[in-house]
Amino acid sequence: MQMSDTRQIAATPSEVYAALLNPDILKACVPGATEVTGSPEEGFEASVTQKVGPVKATFKGQVTLSEMVENQSLTITGEGKGGAAGFAKGGAEVRMAEVNGGTELSYDVEAKVGGKLAQLGSRIIDGFAKKMADQFFSNLQETLEGPAEPDGEEAPKKGWLGRLTGKE
Image (tube, rainbow, N blue to C red; front, side, top):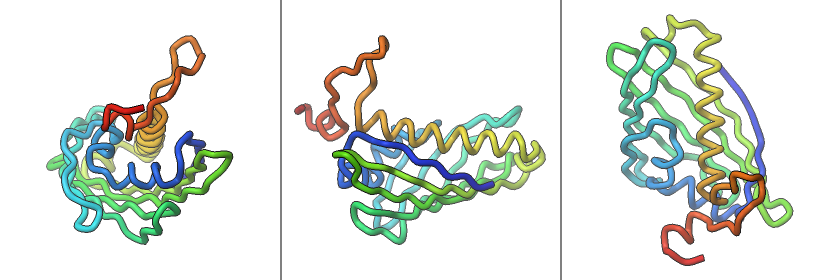
């Protein structure tokens, strides 16, 4: 399964790049993540609980960052085992470009599954993988920009760096 998308993020490429290297930000952005530890240099270990169709499993796995070009691009590769549910593995090539004071983030994702998960059928798996990728990048965008106001008007945004340090 492969997919690509682009989104505009109201943060500089350096802020987006730094967020993708931060295990706390990754934990907040990966849907179902209960634990993300490690470093960009040595890789991350993650635990993610997800329900795909009738199959619910906790995946434990490794995430590796490679082909890192500071503030421009990186490749994220991961593989997780979910016991009897099977396995999932995949990767994303992520590119960042400065546009109008923000960042245009584009990504190409590829995912594969095996075991019970593979028996669910490609339509369910493809839809789930697309939803997971969209949710991750939406969470990243919200973490960097801050949530939008419910009535449609945007509040003054406090980025993730400000939230972590308590400063605006």
